[in-house]
Structure formats: C-alpha cells, structure tokens
Length: 305
Image 1 (cartoon, rainbow, N blue to C red):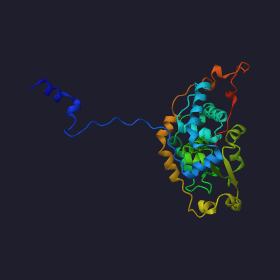
Image 2: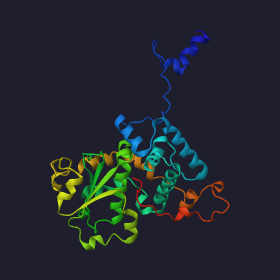
Image 3: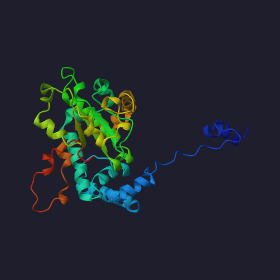
C-alpha cells in the first residue's frame, strides 16, 4: 500500500467524509444590530425620540466612544442594542444618555440587596403570590401594562425588597423589546385593601427609590377614572374589563424561561462601585472636585423608562 493511501486512511477529516460530502462551513460570525421595529414604529421613534435610522449606528458608536473615554471601568455592555435603550430613553442626547447609563450601573451596585442574584428562580414566591403581572394586551398607544397588587403581599412571608426585585426583573425583561423602548410601559397599581401597617414598610429611602419608576395609574374603588386611560377591552374583569379573568401564569412562564439571560447579566461578580464609576482622569477638567459626584447619585429605579 502506498504512503498516499495510508495517509488517506488515517486522516480524520478524510475518514469522516463520504465520497460526495463536503466539509461543513464554519459557523457564521455574530451579526450586528438589526432593527425589529415596524415602519410605523420607526416613524414614531423619529418623531417622538429624535431617532433617525440613517444615523442610528453613528449615534450608538458616539455613545460607545464616550463610555470608553470617560468611564473605561464601567463594566457595561457596549453592544448596539443595549446602548440604544439609553439613547432612546434620552431622545438621542449623548450626554444625557451617558449619564443615564452611569446611573443605571450606580443603582445596581449601590443597592446589592435588590440586584445581587437577580433571577426569576430566586423570586418564585413573589411571582406565585400574584403581587405583579403583565397584562396580555397593550394599551391603545402600544404600552405594556404592568399590574401591581400590593394587597397580595404578606409581610411575614418575605421582605419588601423581594417585591422590588420582582418589579425590576419584569421591567428589565419588558424593556429588552424595541417596541417597548419606543412605546413605553404603564403601571396599573391597585392599592385596594392595603392597610396603613403594610404601607409603613415603604420608608423614605424605599419610596425615593421606587416612586416615579414609570407612569402610574392609581385607582381605588372608582373604575370610571381608570377606564378613561385604559379601555375595558384590554382589562381583566377584576378591573371592570372584558378581557377575561386576571391570569398570572403566562407572564410568570415568560420570566422563568429567561433564567439564563438574568444569570449572565445579574449573577456575575462585579468590581466595587467607586472603581467602576470614577471617570477617566482626562475626562475631569482642571477645576473638577476630587470626589466623583456620580457616586452620590441615588437614581430612581428605572426612572429612564
């Protein structure tokens, strides 16, 4: 037998291929940002958020360059889709979008009891209680509706921070959608049956963090005022609507299916807050104070959306 035939017999690549089979091509490289907005939402983003599709990637790159120059230790994702969230939230004002991004990470690192180990499986008790859920239908403007029912919380079962964790978890999941980034989110807060003793768990610090998260529709027993903002056909019958009974299982399933995403984002060790948020020396002017003012920022929980 010739050396050539021996080579063919022992070559792994040759031995693994049939006579008519070609080697598999390498996996494709990850693609960049691909817009998922409809033409209608592209037009809405242009009008309301100052988003110009032809300049979108240029704007993202500008924000990315600012992060690298001014906050090189921020430890943030620099992917197009992630940075777009902050540009849209501040109508493509670079400086305000950068500050929002810094505040976002400042909040996460200054409130570890809320953000450490933030994943759906760690909040099964809150989700099962029905404290919050997302209604299956959006409002006429396309906003998702987050329904919060504080009366479902029993303080002896778990601390109030678990409710805040579940709220943030839901907001984080919702805002991943470009449609939500353009249309926004509405919170329907049902305070019926909430006693003063339960309300006392919201101290000044908690209130400052949470109040103003989003647009709230607060209502008591008068549903007429609620229906002026949210039509009956998108509301469950518990709120005088015609969309069937309130069901928490569908949204809980959505969150629990996102476990791996939250583990990657919120369950990894992070450097100390100060070392991350300190601007690069060249970003500080000659008359800038020595301490970083952003360290004192206690941004409201997701005040950007």
